[in-house]
Length: 199
Ligand SMILES: Cc1cc2nc3c(=O)[nH]c(=O)nc-3n(C[C@H](O)[C@H](O)[C@H](O)COP(=O)(O)O)c2cc1C
Image (cartoon, rainbow, N blue to C red; front, side, top):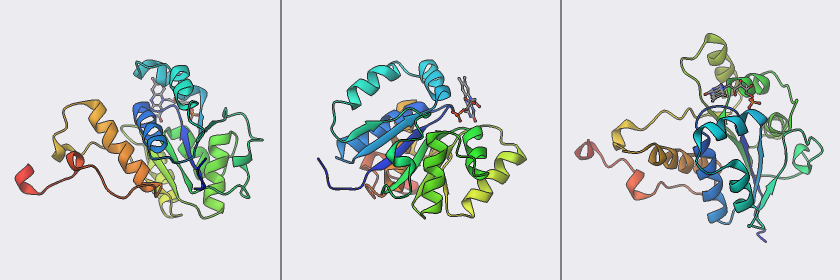
């Protein structure tokens, strides 16, 4: 078992759940204790977008001692308390509903509560907000949280890398999330921008 503090990954019902899958895979591969919760909408989107079922992914992750899963209604989970130390949290992807709840302090499920705890305890919080187009309400909620130190990281593709497959774009964003959680600080070479010669 690792002595490192855990990170939290929340998965909500926005498009792009393969980024969550790759993020959790990477965290466990790098021996990072990882606590996960997925909303019921996230599971519906997962079914639409993924080949591996959410249940199979959970089973695979549970092979690791470093992995813990809590259902979103389990607000008694230790991680719901500010006295439970963590390195921070990422919500990947983050729906506009969850964004709005967090921006208004509505801790009505475990994912939203953990985000609220990160903010009150001044721990890193990253939201991979995904929707298009964005309404003024979405933008106001993002601006409000950005001004409070939350990292807003929409999964806008790095077109300059000329990635061919959606899975490569998801891999790129998973690396960005893992880096935002302070676990790594470099992108692998094939996902680095190498200047205009590359374009
Ligand atoms: C297939 C599918 C894709 C969706 N994509 C998005 C999305 O990209 N962004 C978003 O904000 N909501 C999206 N939604 C709607 C959310 O899932 C819905 O607002 C839900 O209540 C969010 O709940 P949660 O934040 O607790 O996960 C999608 C729903 C479905 C079924």
